Amino acid sequence: MHSADKIQRFPLLNLKQLDDQQRPFADEILKVASIGTSGPFNMLLRSPVMGLRMFAMLDYLRSNTSVPRKLNEFAILIQARLWTSQVAWAVHYPLALKAGLSQAVADDLKVRKRPASMQPDEAVVYDFCMDLAKDHVVSDATFNKVRELFSDQQIVDLIMVSGAYITLAMLSNTAEDATPGGNAPPLQPLPPQ
Image (cartoon, rainbow, N blue to C red; front, side):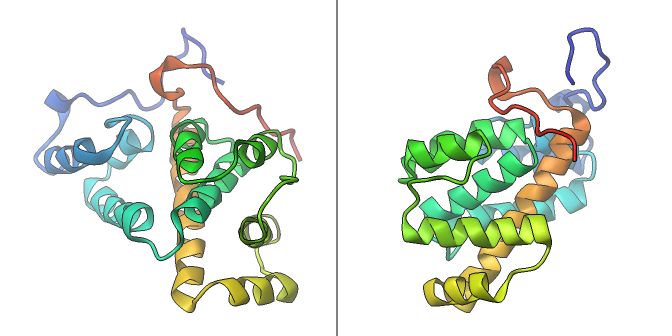
């Protein structure tokens, strides 16, 4: 997908290239993003008004969500795996482990296996996110489990974090973003359907 001699679809914008709408947005990104303005942020800078609004939503979904951090990071990893989003996986894998997700759960997910050692709350999040992503609906059985675990706000926040990271994966995958730090891609591509 990404070779050294291939022309980049969306070359990384440097700060000197940014216009008056992009510059303040880049400043906001640089305050919090471990990957700077690379990855999906490079794409979002190309539509700065929309990008700034998306960034505000991401700030809520990452820092102020009602979903417990471990489960929120797990939902992000689920979408990163389903979309083979190298950037999201590389950034959020260590954050998920730091938040308390077991390495065994994350590593099973990485190789496209239903994690064998999930805690009950993790299994509910996994089933909910997989129902939405694969079937585009949530079964009654899954909804009843998520309803027992989460408030209305938490259910909405879980749906939104999943959707936001699907959007970021679409941006990164379209741009064929390299893995942060030039590291080898952590995820193997999914087989064609």
